[in-house]
Image (cartoon, rainbow, N blue to C red; front, side, top):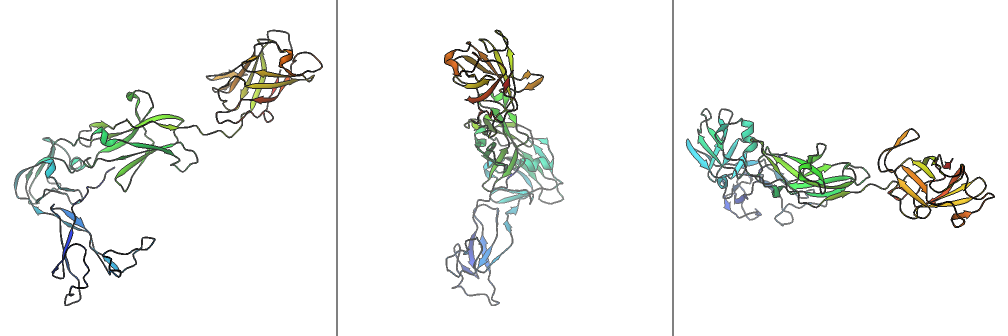
Amino acid sequence: MTLPPAWSYPSQLTVVNGVGVTGAQSVGGIAPLSNGALSFTVTTGASAAESFVPVVYVDGGASTRLEIDANNRPVEAFGVGGLTTVVPANAGIGAATIAPASLTAVSLPGNYLTTSSLRYAWDTNDVFQYQGVGISLDQFESAITLGQGLSINYAPDASGVSTFNLGAEIATTPTSLLATTTVGNYDGGTTLNDIRATFTVPATASAGTTFVLQRKVDGSADSTFATVTTATSVVNADATVSFTDSNVSAGSYVYRIRATKPVTGTVVNGDNSTPAVTVTAPADATPPKSTYAALTTSTGLAGSLDSTDATTFTFDRALAAVVTGDTIRVRDADGTIYDLINGTNATFGLNSAAAIVNGTSFPAGQVLTVTLTATPSAGAVVAAGTTAGLQFPATVIDQSGLATAGGVNWDVAGSSDITIS
């Protein structure tokens, strides 16, 4: 991506129909030419190279500006001329050394560069070098920029051979590549998981300098920065470039810009001292449902719930970390209702890695193991049935605290398997 060189020297309107003027002028008091035409003279600024476009309009409001409506459409009659470029005289034959501060303009379309008073033009017949080493015309044009120093052995005649020898490529300092980052749904989606990094291209960056976006996990070593090959970029009207890194996984990241110079391929890493940017996992609005329930460990009486017995549940989506007080309420065939309470009479645990249950692999957070730490007692029984204790099969009838990270509770009624047997 490249940005055109800035023309920073203002043109001045100095003569209208032979009358000297200053700046924008009304011609009401200036006599027209004999043919009714309007002529004017534009004088360029102190630098020898400048481009401008003349605009002539009927100043109905005498405001010395072209009036526009709310939609930015002109409401006064006007005419626009063509782009006019003023350049200095062609340099004479001979050698010249141009210091970085003396280079006032570079025109790639025009194939020339200027100092404050001279123009040096090149063509395919010329020789191009970088610190004395031959390079191609494309490489020369990708590297030449304002602030660049070079030496020239100039032959003004088009049939002659000029030599343009570039000095060292302009240093692009890391701090000048400092990026700012924001999170949004920049790809048009509904989830705030896109990160936009915006930075300003240094004014002296060579035209052929390439820029890429790099990312690392916050807190990791700089050696883990990796180029985001899927990032898209847009050059904005305010001379900034915006990279968009779309659909980023939940986490905290740090970004930087990496620049590669056009001739030498020198890599310059941008400043990565920007604050970390965090993408939060979107809330899961779908309630988790259990797909399998079974008594997987039985150490006491067969068919009844005893201390150290373990029950396993699998779910169709990950649950948030369990906490003390999470509760599963179960009921057996004779009407006994019993609460399994994490930290009181049972221990709840979620799988931290993939686990195989009943021949199926489940990702982390989708397998819940409930291990009884005390034999059912009268204090733990919510409702007594016709037979003492809790017998199997037993059915889950309610729960508390077991939910996704988004806070959506276990849908007991909608689950396909809630019977422990």
